[in-house]
Length: 103
Image 1 (cartoon, rainbow, N blue to C red):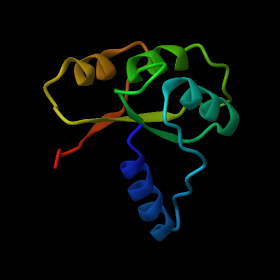
Image 2 (image 1 turned 120 degrees about the vertical axis):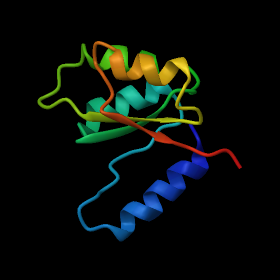
Image 3 (image 1 turned 45 degrees about the vertical axis):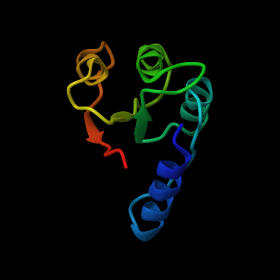
């Protein structure tokens, strides 16, 4: 739900030929809709989102009927928090995480 990060990610993707941003979302429910509609290869997922958090998105992803399930990279400000552990060990596990520094 961090709009600044979304803007930075889109700006970076514009510089890389092999990356195309197919959607962004500011809450977990919209995230699920975007994933279902666009069927991306990779999802960058924050845990702290309104409506449905990152673990809720991971839980629902396992039940989506997609031709190909996306890889999920989670974003966290703390690599020691429960979200990272739960995301990496969930039934639909994240492939890794990005450590976001707080300014």
